[in-house]
Amino acid sequence: MVYEALATSRTPAMIVYVLDVSASMTRPLGGKRRIDVVTDALRAALQRMVFLSTKGTRVAPRYRIAMYAYSDHVYDLLDGVKTVDQVVRLGVPQLTMLAGTDTARAFEHVERLLRRELSAERYEPAPLVCHMTDGDYTGDDPAPIARRIMEMRSGDGNVLIENIFISDRILPDQIPNPKQWSGIQRATPLIGEYADKLRAMSSPLPESYRTVLLESGYQLTPGAVMMLPGMSAELVEMGFVMSTSTPVTR
Image (cartoon, rainbow, N blue to C red; front, side, top):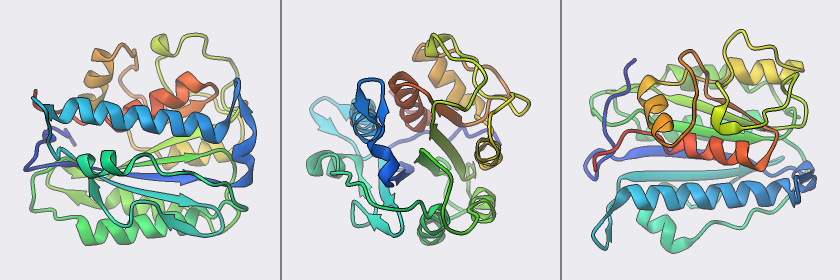
């Protein structure tokens, strides 16, 4: 799939954020709680979408956004799909930590949403699902549902899934400079079975996305997958930047 459709007012890009708000998100990452790092990165992603959507003083509806938080239950933070200008008026939702991590239930909500929203006949950017978590799931295995989602498609290509995995131990080595990091490849050694599962649930990074990220100063190489090791606030932010990297007209 080439993923060449541009995000415009007539063909907006759809991004579905799926955010783990289990109790472990109160743990520190750098000098902040993990949940606060994610909130800051999400706010920066929305600001980037606004910048990419602004013509003069008007914010064009180039992005359509859905947002789910999940623990033992799933919470629709935006009450459906909203355009980026509507989300800006609403502001970044407050994320409240709860108990477990039922990832499969969250992905089931995403699957139902996409079945309602998708049309293979429309040539618009393939939807992207940006999933952020910091630990293993506590319910059913989410992988079969993720595979079904990645088999869904618009006229531009199959649905993309990106995973941001917040953990101190994903890669054998630290990443001193995220801007110079080449990304996770299919053969990159990972620590832990869940990291391997999330990689299998992550789409290949489209070349069009990689080009946008190169223009933003990141050095991801061909063959990278859409998985970010959230070992620092900078890497978490990079993951949310990746979610906004659909090509746009300027």
